[in-house]
Image (cartoon, rainbow, N blue to C red; front, side):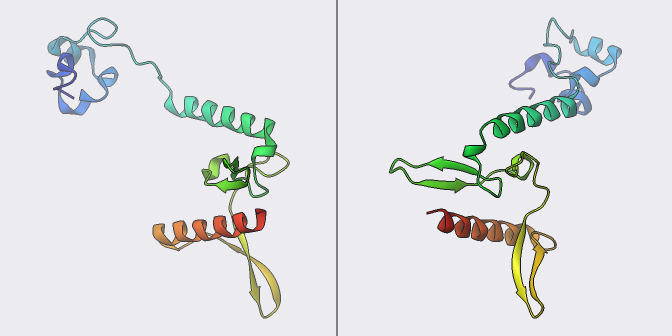
Length: 144
């Protein structure tokens, strides 16, 4: 940061990456004037802005349900005309009614019949990814 933003080079490490949190006397000692020698922070409430962004994406996805699979994944059309599913972040997966899908489930046969099993609990990072890929392949095979 000090190399690419020399105007911040005299700030202490604790506030170097967030000068807007530095006390006035620290900014003065470093010769930093927010809005003059360094820009004022554009986004002050990151969580609120992220929430707005997620809602905007969900609104767009709800308005374009034909581009969502029945499990909430994005559907794309390949150059040969076939439609296929692509990975979609969990927070953007919606059902056909437009509701966010909270957690993926898969059917698992048991001695008492078919039951629903939660996916991704206690499997570790690689296990989750492998299972997600497997489910996507199965879904894509059913869509062809």
